[in-house]
Image 1 (cartoon, rainbow, N blue to C red):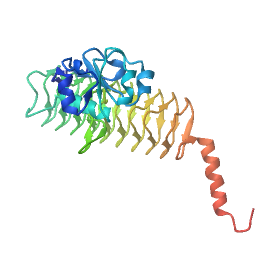
Image 2 (cartoon, one colour):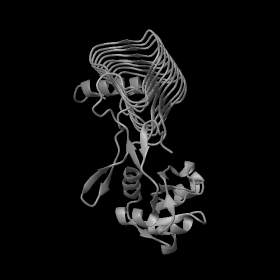
Image 3 (cartoon, one colour):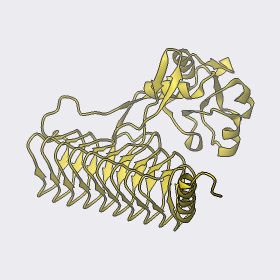
Image 4 (cartoon, rainbow, N blue to C red):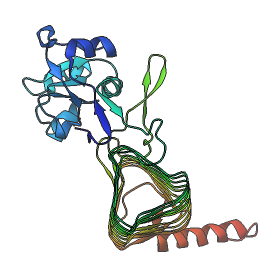
Length: 338
């Protein structure tokens, strides 16, 4: 269930209404009166939620708990657990996206000026001119917030934090002693879309962004909130300027990322990992504890703990250097030499 501090509950809704909204067909018409109140991922499903599966193997491998309903393709209906109603359509992810938008509405700052009456501000907090703090937000003792920064509804910020000017923070939980430099964006929607009959449809991003104690986020960097689970930055991790952290990313403790690093969605990063400038990581990968990724490297497969990788596609550093040296020799050979 999405965090109610950040998302308004618009449910429940009947499966018949969801079918009409999404264009799905109920495999069993007798389930049309069943109500669901939220969307969920397969592994966190409950009897009053609706989920989706794009392939029957995901249902079988994920060990799906009993959901009230599931958007599936016609060839996957028989793989659903007994009692789970099937909403059949060619694009189950589209069904999920439309259902999520119907059942959950993000809470935004709308029309407030200054500090909302329901916000909780502890002693010795310093607010610059033009700061806006939304309903139900919390700011801990000794925190300083720069000019024109916007703190969204429900956001919790710990003690002794430094938040610079023109920062936006929403859908987020921030620990103690966190530094967020000017222009950073925390908790914006992650990048997700699916094809619909009239073009691309945004997939609602229903997770949170969590910055643990001692994290630093550089100027104009972005940490997207999760698609459903959370995006998490581990304790004492330091992020340079102009870094992009995608949705559902989990970064360990004491990591460093130099400018222009880009981490795609659902990547997991261990403790003590180092990224050179302009490094990039493809989605759903794992980078092990203590690994080092050189500047401008492009990672497209898992990196074992403690290894240093470079190049594109990234590979162990010695291999990359040998291949680069060999290629340079080949390119500089004189014609006729072996």
